[in-house]
Every structure is written in C-alpha cells, then in structure tokens.
Image (spheres, rainbow, N blue to C red):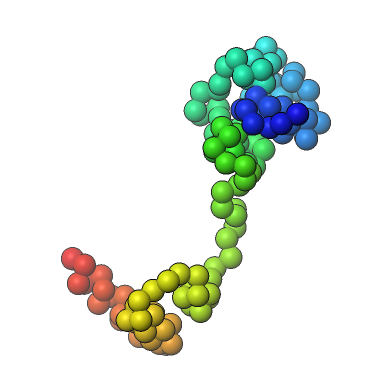
Length: 123
C-alpha cells in the first residue's frame, strides 16, 4: 500500500505502534468511527488534533498531509554548528566571509562588544 494520502499515512503510523483503531481513538478521546473515516480519507481532523497526532507519532504535519515524504523536516535536537561549519554551509561574498572569519576569531568579550555595536546601529 502506497502512503500518499493522509489516511494511508495515519494507518501506517498507527499500525507501526501496534495500535488498533479503538486504542488509538481512546488516546485522543475520539470514536473508533472517526479514526476509520480519517484512514479512509473521508474526513480530516481539525488543525489542533492534526498537530497532536503529528506530535504523538513524532512526525511533521507536512508529512501527515503528504506535503513531503520526509517524516521530519528538521532534527528535533539540531547540533550547533561551529563557525567554520556555518561558513562552509553557505555562499557568502568575499567581504562577508572576511567579516564572519574575523568575528569567529575574536575572544568572547570582543564578540559581545561587536554584537552590542550591531544592536546599537540597528536602532
């Protein structure tokens, strides 16, 4: 079975947790018939319930709605990038690259001064 509808994805996720329609319905205080209608693509849950279902299965709402084939759009705990990783992940002008490289080489107290100055100039 291809998972290209909300209903088919919901059913596949439910089965992956070994839940019957009834047990799944009870988790969300719904009737079994509501789950059946969702899985047969006869109804869609309201937005708040859709978000709760996505959270329950640890997938994105976009995945449930078949807007993407990736279950998660972003990692739940992204690893912070070092300055070098950040610089290598984007295309910057030569001037921007020089400014970032200089900033990342500064000690913490000087970085704070630079940020304070930037905030002052933005006012």
